Image (cartoon, rainbow, N blue to C red; front, top):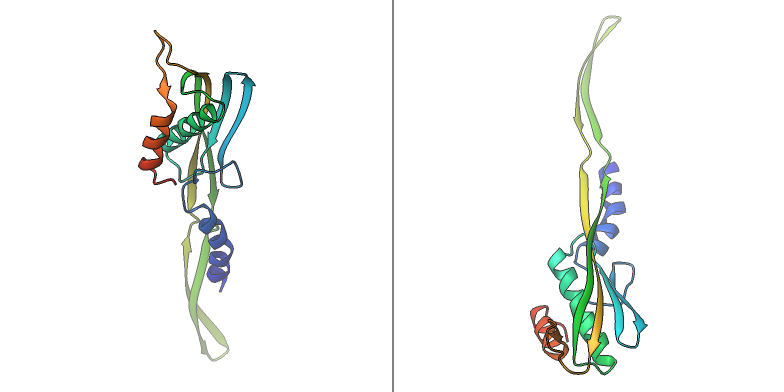
Length: 164
């Protein structure tokens, strides 16, 4: 019965977090956020959950950067600064002890024989990637600077992750 109650308590947590963070505005399970810092300068973040790969977090940050610069009338952008971090979190389930035994009565004596089995709790560790980009938008591709083509990058990453 205790095991059933524990599973019932953990199931919603596992259900809510069993998929990687979708491409969405930041919410309970992660997502992107962005801020315009100057007419042509933007800061974009993507926060993944414990099922999101570092590659996906970087791709989603780039996708959001491409969308933001396009929305502001720029055709391409350069990454001015980038940060990638990972936070680690874990939880441990409770251990369980089960005892079985038998008692035998002989006269005025009781004899007991028992056995206890202990199953330790399990620790689950999650790594949550975070990517931050500072990007500068350009109306036309400048010479001497590597830039991403915003429209091409949007198409490529949306196709890779099957995003509408």
